[in-house]
Structures are given as C-alpha cells and as structure tokens.
Image (cartoon, rainbow, N blue to C red):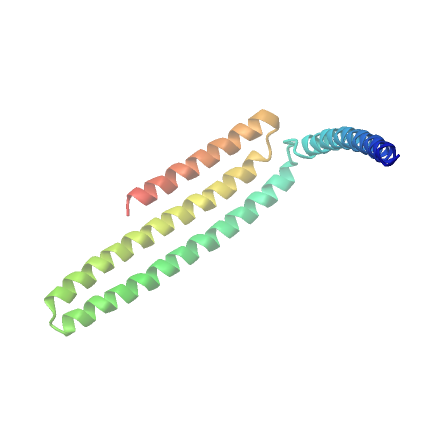
Length: 169
C-alpha cells in the first residue's frame, strides 16, 4: 500500500508540476507579447518626436545669435587661458635665465613652446566648436534629409578641425 501511496503522490506532484510549467509558459508568452507591443509603441513615439522639423526663421535667428554669443565667450575663455598659461611659461623661462642655468633655460623654453602650441590648439578647437554650434543652429531651418545632411557636414568639419589641432601640437 505504501508503494501505491508513493505512486499517487508522485503522480499528483507531476500533474502539479506540469500545471505550473504550463502557467509559467503562458505567462512568458503574454509578457513577450506585451513587451513587443510596448517596444513598438515606444519606437513609434520616438520616431514622431525625433522628426527633423524645421524651426521658424525667427527661432533659427534667435538660436544662431545665442550660439554666436556663447561661442564668442568660449573662444575668449580659451584665449584668456592660453594667455595665462603662456605668461606662466614665460616667467619660468625668465627665472631660469636669471638663475644662469643653461639646461633649465632650454627645458623651460621647450615647455613654453609646448604651452604655446597647446594654447593655439585649444583656441582653434574653441573657434571650431563655436562655428559648429552656429552651423547646427542654422541647419534647424532645413527639414528632414537636408537638415541631417547639414548637421552631418557640420560634425565632419568639426572633427577635421579637431584632428588638425591634435596633429599641430
């Protein structure tokens, strides 16, 4: 009799296990279906909001003016930083000359040249980034593919200037 009870118990457990697996499988199918629908909805919403709609001429003009002002400030900051760094480097050269240490003079002069090159590079990049911001804002007057192409051209130009600035150091 014990064997029969064990067999019945094992059979009940097996049926329960099958029901659980079926329920879990069904839940996963529902979850996947809902997830697919949610993803499709999110993609559609993104596509609608990411349209390259053109801005009005007044909006573009305002945004361009803002970008120009910001760009001028950024370039002025880069120039100021470079001027300060160059002044520090020149002072180091002058101190080395005053100490009559030829090796230190040569080292400080080399460092001053590197500092000047880095400053020029930073100014060059700041100018390119300022021009890029203005160009991108001007692209906002265009629509769809024209706008994307315009922005891609602006990005390419910026990348080229940055690369040129790196190689000029």
